[in-house]
Length: 340
Image (cartoon, rainbow, N blue to C red; front, side, top):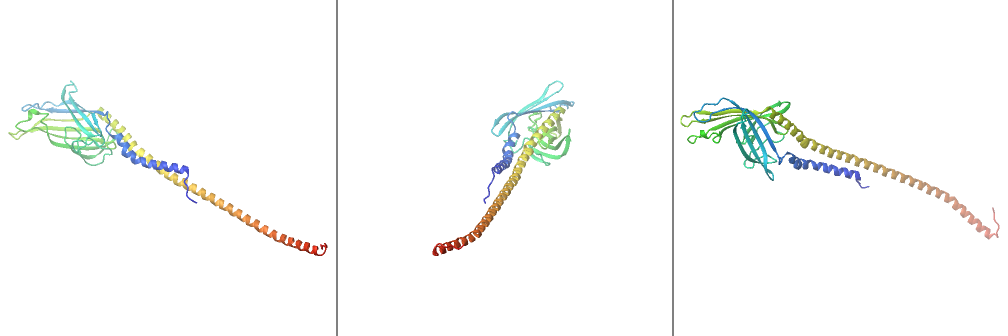
């Protein structure tokens, strides 16, 4: 008896194979489409800050004043896997709306990996941020790539986050302070700060940045401080970024954990159902075959009994028939006399 596969088992096998193949297809091709930088991406973060500075050599430090910085990034061009982001920063006096400083620059990054096209650095944190240092990252466009050191975990407004710190020294600040370029010497800036990152989505929910700019007088060797300050996320920005991180976390969980888990469960369930269904079908077929064989054996036994009875009945009848033949023959020889 050959092994036959029932139609329902064939259907379950097909579902099992499709579900199993869908996991790598989903993770390798579908999920990256959800996680890439979209064509219409635009985001604005607002910082509050306290700053003081000198206008030029010989001037005194200003009194500390409050400033508001709005950093906007938006997609302005898409070429295949590359997107060009326009980074715009506007620094204002929150009381008078006077613009202290404004800049605009473009960067091109891979929309899937967020790596810069022109250097081996990354624009942002990846998904599933680990408790380790991250190298070759640039959080601000004016900073070179640097190391973001893991400092530990904490909770920000009920959201678990990882804290990373960074420090960059010796940044050329000639463009911002041209009056301080003297005898080929240029002002430099040291910058340091911290980032609070939601680890599942890699989204930055809070930031603090500090800096100081100084100039080393070539004639005296004296260090002259030009400006210093610090900025941090405004409260409404923190709330907005936490909500965005929670949405990204939920979407990422559904895309990278829940749906693959469902596909795996469906595939394994189909395997189990297929095995048990085929086993049950085989058992049923074995039982049917055994019943057929038992019926056939009973019929064969009945046939043998019938043949035996027929044989036993035919033997006496044959004797009677032979005796009758002998009597008929004797009667014929005696002239019709018959003994009874």
